Length: 111
Length: 113
Image 1 (cartoon, each protein chain N blue to C red):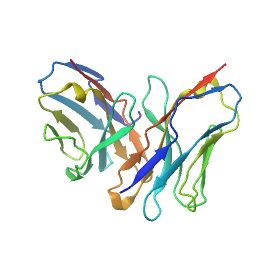
Image 2 (cartoon, rainbow over the protein chains, first blue to last red; image 1 turned 60 degrees about the horizontal axis):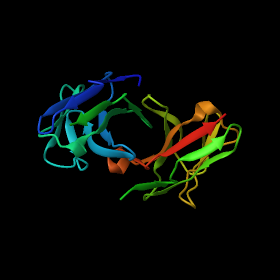
Image 3 (spheres, chains in turn brown, orange; image 1 turned 90 degrees about the vertical axis):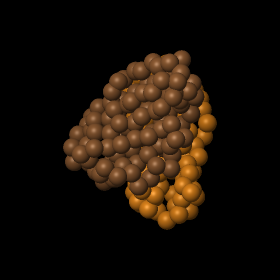
Image 4 (cartoon, rainbow over the protein chains, first blue to last red; image 1 turned 180 degrees about the vertical axis):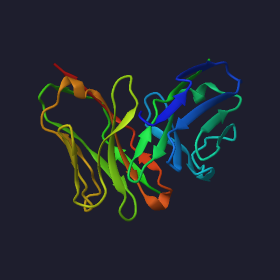
């Protein structure tokens, strides 16, 4: 979507490997979110950033998941020791005053 | 906590049929309500929104009215087209919940010519 670039668009990784997913938003939005969309499921909230801090990381499913944001801009979501159940589309969004703008997502497949 | 419940799909309609996708929510106070749409192969995009009770959001022939009394935000369209085939997500957002969007599970709509 306009204003949010995610990379890579597709990632296939072997079980047990670590992966990093990147979100590069346009400047000027302090709020940034990560969501996960699993096959046949809705969108699951993972973590929310306000600037560089994460006041709500309640959606991270396990301690294998972590995220950071630097310079109030780029964010990376890291998954360590990937498992097959981590396969999903990972979406990044930036927050406007009343709505959120989503990137195209990274499709992660763990084989 | 906040939650959104929407009707399960898939919904299959013929072109020009009337569409209703039900959505109800649970939240305290007055959240903002949204419908997002995900067309095949594309990212999630906002379809319409309503920020206070009795507001009607509308876009591309779709409408939804914020009903506080029934905690609902049902999506309607009078005459669907094949190009409306997509997955539709109802969502709410509340400032006190850190501004995050809480989504329903999505409803897949397929429109036959």
